[in-house]
Length: 193
Ligand SMILES: CC(C)(COP(=O)(O)OP(=O)(O)OC[C@H]1O[C@@H](n2cnc3c(N)ncnc32)[C@H](O)[C@@H]1OP(=O)(O)O)[C@@H](O)C(=O)NCCC(=O)NCCS
Image (tube, rainbow, N blue to C red; front, top):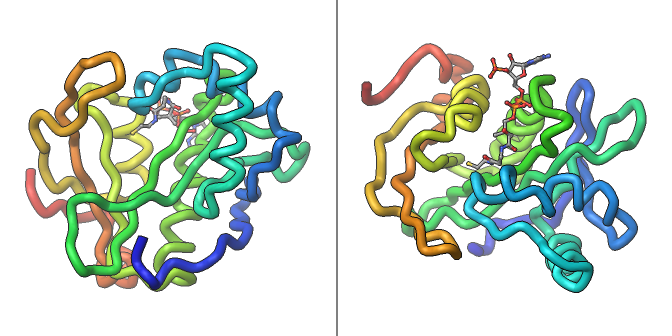
């Protein structure tokens, strides 16, 4: 990723603490990483064995841009969120975001809150010019999270992502530009629709 990337700092929101993963987090990790419904929607393969789980948690703990989403009150892990490369742009300070939430924690607004915290961190600490995000068309829960967090719809990329099982998805793309973030009015406007 480009040179503007910075090492991870913890991110705090009203109810959540986003922190680094460790190898001690296996129990919380498996809540979503072994769940086909969660992982397939995010385009990933669920872990199917202890070996796969250990390898995947190792990769996640080694990723300086992957965060465990934990509840500040209890410390329990509810999901994962990470900064990732924005493959659609060239020579701009852009970052994308991906996430998974364990099903037992759906419906509490946790991911919307985590995503808002990540957007704030991207603009205020990482100093990016824009933040982007996408979901497979038809993933309505993710669409609602993205829109509640203030992203603007940019359009659909057809035939964007071939999953490990060979199924191909169109992707709905969204972004927030720095000027939109700073104006505080992002959720009120749409560029296309
Ligand atoms: C996408 C995903 C994270 C969304 O989970 P979610 O629980 O719907 O999202 P949130 O945690 O933001 O919760 C929002 C829901 O909680 C409700 N809610 C309850 N209390 C809330 C609060 N205090 N604040 C905000 N929302 C609240 C909202 O009304 C909303 O429900 P609705 O969309 O039916 O209106 C989850 O479905 C998931 O992990 N899916 C599989 C992986 C995936 O798709 N990843 C994204 C790939 S692009």
